[in-house]
Image 1 (cartoon, rainbow, N blue to C red):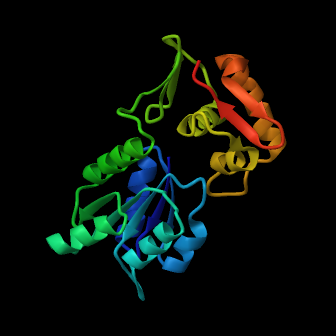
Image 2 (image 1 turned 120 degrees about the horizontal axis):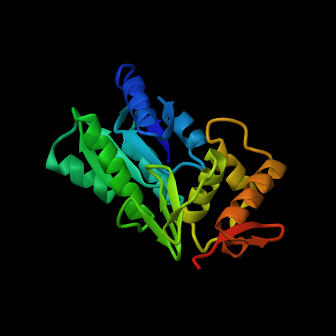
Length: 218
């Protein structure tokens, strides 16, 4: 899971960044609304958004995204604890609202819960026909038998599973494999996909030429 952390506190930002990475997530930390607009992309699974940013109200950024039909889940983190503030955040499109100070385990639990809800998954295990994934533990099973997948193969499988039934463009998969750097080139993506097909069954990954790939539950 890749998290965009929008937080201008110089103490809290690095601490949250470290906690997210320690929990097995990738994360990018930005402090300004303009940087957050530029950083949000198809590889972003969830945004942690501070409500009080330097020079801008965090909810303005949330309104900007929702007005453009950007549905990436957002958890607002703020010191504003009044009921009216919490209701305003939720009404403007936040998926959750967490009041500072909070315990890091609670934040991580809420991140996982919102992500599952957004992906319409009831638990940490995703069922796709005979295929089962546990993104948090980096494990996958086929017909109940564990699969020996490389890190890249598991990343690809998770990326396709998150949008099961949808054709995912090759360039998007390349970006998802390296959310904090240069996208993985198309040839490398194809090599990893070929290896993944051999392990889960070629029929489970459909190629749409010139467009991308689709994971099918079968």
